[in-house]
Length: 252
Image (cartoon, rainbow, N blue to C red; front, side, top):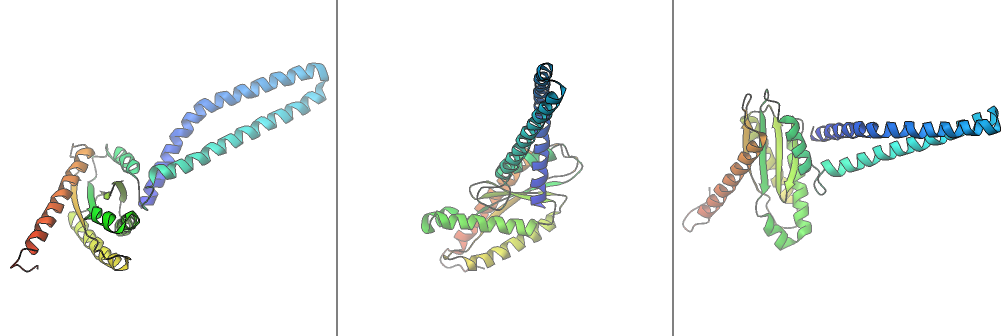
C-alpha cells in the first residue's frame, strides 16, 4: 500500500510537470516546425516541387524524432528523480518528502480519521558508537522493513523523517488495531534481534495522535502531538528500566 501511495504521488507530480512542459514545449515545437516550413518554401522556389517535398519530409521527420527523443528523455529523468525524491536513500520506505506530500494531500480531507504514529529506536547511538555505522544502518533498515511489513495492507504509508525516527500515516483505523499492530512490531523485532551479527536487543518507542472526522486542527499539529507522545513513551521506558535495575527489586 505504501508503495502504491508513493507511486500515486509520483504520477501526480509527473502530470504537473507534464502540464508545465506542454505549456512551454508545444509553442516551441510549433515555432520550429513553422521555420522549417519557411525554409522548405524557400527551397521550393529555387529547386522545384519534387525537391521541396523531399526536403520537407526529411526536415519534418528529423524535427519530430528530436522532439520525441527529448520528450522520452525528460519523462525518464522524471521517473528517476521521483524514485530518489519519494524513497528514503537508505531504508525501504518513504522519504520525508513523501510524508510531507501525503500530509499535504490529506490536509483538506475532514471526513476521515487520520492517525500519525511516530516511532524511533532505543539506544541507537549506542549501536553506532559500539558496533559501527554499518551496524546502525542495518538496524535502521530492519526497523523500516518491520514497520512496512506490519502496516502493509492498511491505508498507511511508512516514512523515515530523519535519523532513527519514522512516521506511519494511517487512515480510518482504531486505537485497538494500532495496539495489536504494534505488538506484532515488537514480536518481529525480537525475531530480527536474533538474526543480528552483533549482540543487541532491538526495542523502540512510539506515540500516536489522531485527527478525527470534523477536527479542524492542521495535520502538522497532529504530527507534533504524536512526536510528543513518543518522547513521553521513551521517558516512561527509561524510568521503568531504572526501577527494574534498582537493588532489592526484581523486574517483572
